[in-house]
Length: 141
Figure 1: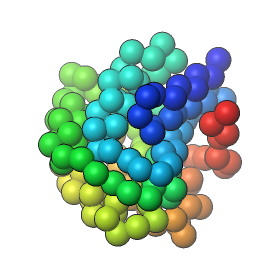
Figure 2: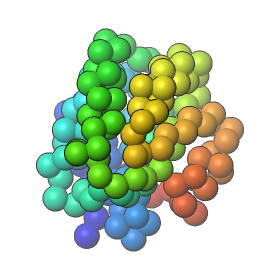
Figure 3: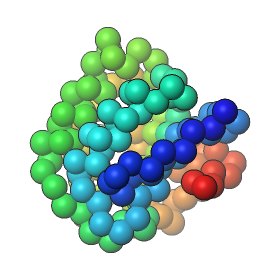
Figure 4: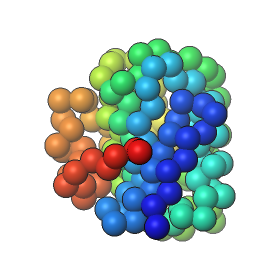
């Protein structure tokens, strides 16, 4: 079964069992707090399984705001080996320098996590898909 959730924030996601992927594609304005809300929502989603790769496509985000402390909270959780007990790969695809820098900092914060993050520019979409073993992007609908 596939699960598609649209949180009250701009962070919608789909868990696609057939592709073994969590797919996230926010659009427009994006708040850093949305990431913490997203992680909390995943934790209670019955379709979520540890060890599944994830693909975050931020290429349609136009504006970012929020406090970087939210990213630190998420990073602390992602580095906790009692919470995250299986490894996976995560692709983060961006189209602007601000997001790249934000996620570059986040990747440094989670360097001891079992989850391995990589940031890709929009032009590197094929490499980003390959990092998480995706041959096609899921549809959020």
